[in-house]
Image (cartoon, rainbow, N blue to C red; front, side, top):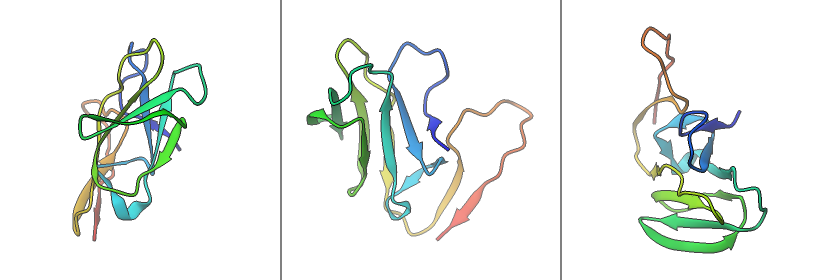
Length: 109
């Protein structure tokens, strides 16, 4: 399922990641979805702090490493999402965890 990278009820645009594990790795075929814009096709994507794609789609499949963010007309920029290309990675859930929660971790290579 899709998992938000910022808490519910936040005043920013949501950046959703699939598969729902962090850190995201390029070889997982990562899809990022910009949610909360209200206007399809009006998404601005940022890569490594620079405007990368204006009036783009609401979702992208990431093909290059980097730090991604998005926004739309009248919305604040989303939290950032870093996509790595590491050969060994320890991943945890992308959704927020509370103290005392049981967490499943993935050690992947």
